[in-house]
Image (cartoon, rainbow, N blue to C red):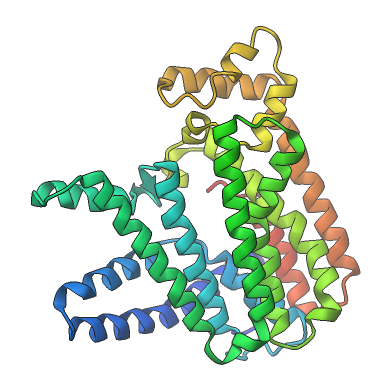
Length: 356
């Protein structure tokens, strides 16, 4: 990748990451579709579905952080070494999204029907045997599993260098998802637990661990890990906190996901924890309705209004600002290569203040 010198370094970094990684993944999907089509034409359908899902959108944040973690550790900006590792993180992310949509019963993803919903509709319209919902969810789980396996395969000759980070990242992602699912079922409203979920559900595998993967490819991870964590952990948490705000209050036309679903599911977010602590006696009955899937759109709008009026939204915005400041201080003090420092700083802004 060539050094980016535009005023919007983050946008350039993401565009570059997307084009390189998508080309790499496109080659994988084309080869695998050809291989399985020769066995049975119907088997290529799963590869084609995975290709369409992975390449249909997404910001390519994790691949960008792999690359710039590599450059920050002294790697050559034009070196292709991080490419397949970067592509592996995008496949891992796709695995997480596919399974997450099934676990949450999400109807939409990236502005279109979720994969399990479309697969169920195919089953219905084809008048196949069995239950359409189970077919759709089963196919989505299989598609996610396939992405998970291909992610490992993309690491190929870099596996030994990145294995400790890669394995820990996958475990952390799973444990974060567990905390999220169990917390919603229990109706958790604890501030510290919400912060833990934000860190493990998305924060670490979105920013910190991809940076570690890039640095591991240079052999300098033991030296730089504390510095990369000082930047990556708070920015990853800020990223998830922004995601929580967008999930509760964002514009569906921009985010591509139904707004308010997190409130119907009772997601144990910092936003909800703050609302539980700050709501007045008059507001509390509405806050306590969060987690009831039969809430009407009017109910959701009332709760959204209360989240603003009780101060919960402002509290989360302040938490995001605090984490960005902490990350900037860590970045300023870190012994990282200058070309990467500016890009990471701009990426921090993009993640924290985005609208989708």
